[in-house]
Length: 147
Image 1 (cartoon, one colour):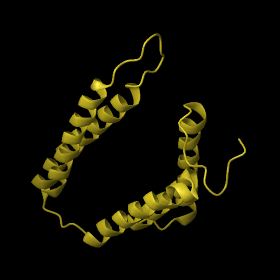
Image 2 (image 1 turned 90 degrees about the horizontal axis):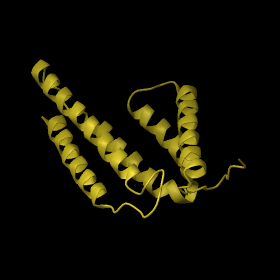
Image 3 (image 1 turned 60 degrees about the vertical axis):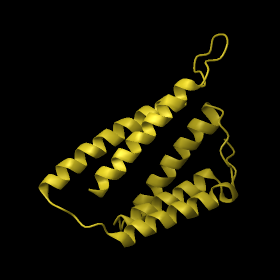
Image 4 (image 1 turned 180 degrees about the vertical axis):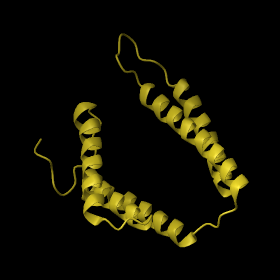
């Protein structure tokens, strides 16, 4: 029941994001990627994930009821709050790597080296995509990349 409610809430958020994205005026002249592109991409992705979540919730509820493990939920919320607080002073790719490892540990992973490497690769790939290729500045933090 909780997953269905959360998924429906995210679906409502996706509708709001998409509505707001369509309200963004297109720029004058030719632009390969206008100001609507990323909000539309985020809204569409959120909608797809939400619909999948609703379908999975109905399927899971039909199979069996499952208890929520509240300590894990609280630890994930704590990790997210710490990530938000440390993002600017520590830096995007450093904070994201640590956040990835923390979430993996809370969700049951016990392979620290694999989690650190996966978190680092994903964080650096995202950093280079947004900061270097798209020109969207992300906090460099304590260790600035030379590339």
